[in-house]
Image 1 (cartoon, one colour):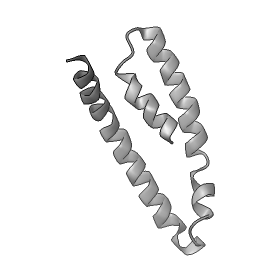
Image 2 (cartoon, one colour):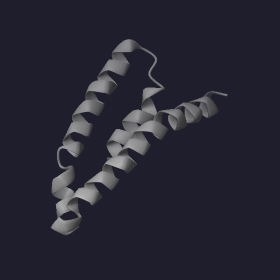
Image 3 (cartoon, one colour):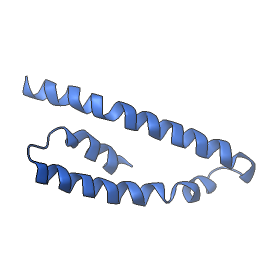
Length: 82
């Protein structure tokens, strides 16, 4: 998951379309590998009775990261340049 966070952080720093396309493909591969294992990993830590609510919470916090990641990366990028 840290790798997808780094991919989002670097997305605003891409100068060419080709580099952005490469980063997008890499992000898709890494995100797909993580999201496909979500329920399997959660099932190792919580009982069956709490699976549905736990998966919901995990998806909620992943969504918050997806919403907040690009603006934070953009601000970080602007701070580095200015």
